[in-house]
Amino acid sequence: MPVYFIRDPSSDSIKIGRSATPQKRIGQLQTGNPHPLELMGWIETEDDVLAEQGLHRFYKAYRRIGEWFAIDQDDVLDQLKRFSGFVPVSGESFAIFGYDRDGIPEYVGVCKWGDFEYDECCPFCGCFCGMHYQESTYMYHCLNCDAYTDFSELNRSLDSEDDAGDPDGI
Image (cartoon, rainbow, N blue to C red; front, side, top):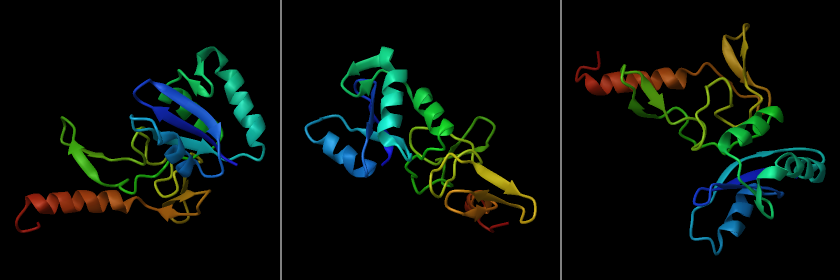
C-alpha cells in the first residue's frame, strides 16, 4: 500500500499517511475542508506500516496534529527521491507556459508543485527512478514504466512555437 504526502497550502502542513488509492484519499480528506488539498506524491513499499511509522518518527519534531507535519516540499522531494517515489503527472509535461528573460522556453513540468529536470523524473509515470540515457538507442528510458523517449516532444513544442511566430512557417 502506498505511503502518500498530501499538502494543505492554507496551513503549510503536509499529511503523511497510507492508502491503497492516494488519489481517492485526497477526495476523502477534502470533504469538509474549504481549502484545496494537493497530492504531492507517494512511495510504494512492501511494508507501508513500517515506512509510514518511520517517516512519522523522522519528522516527529515537526508534527502539528495527528499525521500532519510542518515540513516543506523539499522534505517531501527528498523522501520521494530516496525511495524512487511517484508524483501525479500533469499530462502537460512538454507544454510551454512562458519564456524566461533570455527567451528560453519554460515548460509546465511533470507535476504542479515541483520543478524537476526532464531526466530526473519520468514525465509519463511520475517515477523518481530517473530517466536513464541509453547509448544504443540514443533515448532516455524509464525503469518503472519502460517508456522510451528522446524528448523530441520538447523539440516539437519549440518548432510549433517558432512556426506560430512566422507566417510562412520557415
